[in-house]
Length: 509
Image (cartoon, rainbow, N blue to C red; front, side):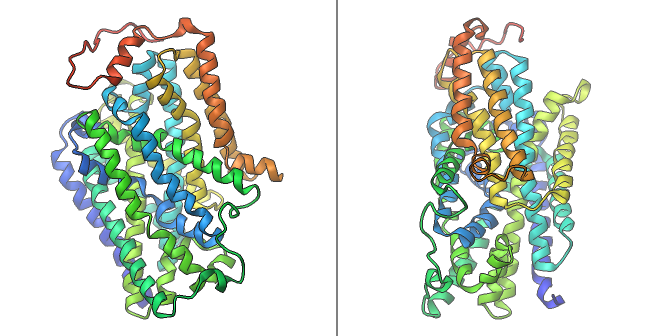
């Protein structure tokens, strides 16, 4: 690849990284307290917060992975963006406002407030680390893939750039700084993918609008048939993971704690649905056009790179270089924004639950937690076996759906949930879904049906986790938290109603 080919995308990476640090510096000047670092002092407006959520939620799986799946398997893979977006409707109806009213900073905070149990809190903390690290892994892998694809740099270089920028931003200004960065990055990502997609569609129309299905020489795009054996099960299990996993993603939920009140949390969620819907119009375009103009990527197993490579197949210089640079900028914005949100959520848990002494719940502890949050997945991404970016993210959704979804739904809407029931459900769901992730990523099971059940585990792990949590709670009524009724009123009563918040609480167990 010549120097002429690589200067534009390389410059795009530099500019996005510099802009990210520059916007983060604005938040740094406004971050003064521990509350600023953890939840931006709970003062983020719905429009700012929705843009920030869109920025961190649209990850490598959205920017690169969806197009790669559509290229590989056809329109049946449109279930991914549908599920990613519709998950916020479930979150809006069941979780958003009560979660904000809980007064928690993190998911473990909510578990402790609702159930008065340190054991449940510690279990939730471990699950946050598992989900956060599992979700960070494809971000670093995607960064390495993107930089290698457009410049020929070694894969570790992209990982190093994203890790360094994320750590600098997070340790400098915490949540307040990241809010500005992620809101900026959503609009950058939307612009970066929309403009090239529109241009490429115009070229396709100029060429006579040939049908990608016919050009592929096969029946392509039949719903529920792509992605391997047992397509109906895989599709519905994936949808279940995406719909119910969204509410269990720690980097998503931590943003709702930054809203001023429950009403603002609901408004934020509605705006998020609109922003995500606008973005997801464009990645499938690259997958469909890639089937026509870049079929060699399918044969060579490079489908995740179709977004970055397609402009060179359809446009002449210098327009191809400019489009590639814009897409590279958007891809790195995706890696940076999602990694920043995940780092904030994991760092919050590490500093509050695993660090001790003066570092616990302090700004210094938060910064140390941020370093630890990034280091492990960055190193693992360099040695991990190559897997589909979207598939890895889907597994993170499955773990979240199997653990925090039952805890949040039952904790918010069922007064009889007990400490024992919550603990049993979290351990069961985490063990089953986590084991499925491990076996899938190591490819330890190759039997057709068993491999499918493990690759898309949500259809059986989520019902099992709910059942265990409910049955164990019914069998152990004495382990219910003291003052459960008052906590339920706190979760569901509007903020305008004066309540006894019960600052003096019994000792936790």
